[in-house]
Image 1 (cartoon, rainbow, N blue to C red):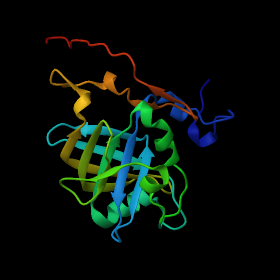
Image 2: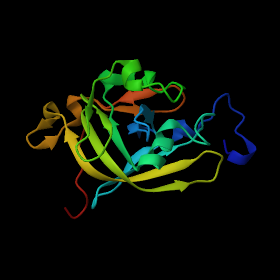
Image 3: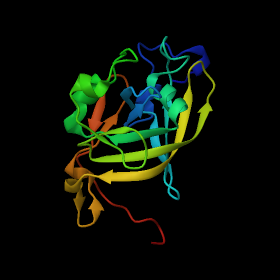
Length: 201
């Protein structure tokens, strides 16, 4: 099968998300200029640089009460900071609850019963028991083609690692089974890890 996205695919559901998988989930926490808090998952997320460490995530839809984008991106535009919380399999249900189309005044930490702590380098809350948290200062927001496609890039200014995830000096993902996004309504968890040496190492 071949199709041009502009012509449509003719399938019951869009296969694009199912092709680019698995994707890590950036569980983004933000605080608005008015002090309101927001927590939402984004699967268009990844690390993009080592030195200095940098990450990105994309918001690709909008809400009527947020001027062409969603709560997370709107808050970041106003404050210039955000926190990426890493999602483990054990938190799949509360993560999913925070993905709902809630009004801007809804605090997803409270709605899902998620414990929060204050970040150390930015004015923002983080998921207290997440395997890791990446505190970020915004470097730029890029608008992509499309009605509500925005990418936020951030420099990581602080990193929290949960103690039980460190084994022999290595951040061991098998201890918490990272949750990943597949296509449609599908997710997966990482339960097996293997290593490969690059040529010349």
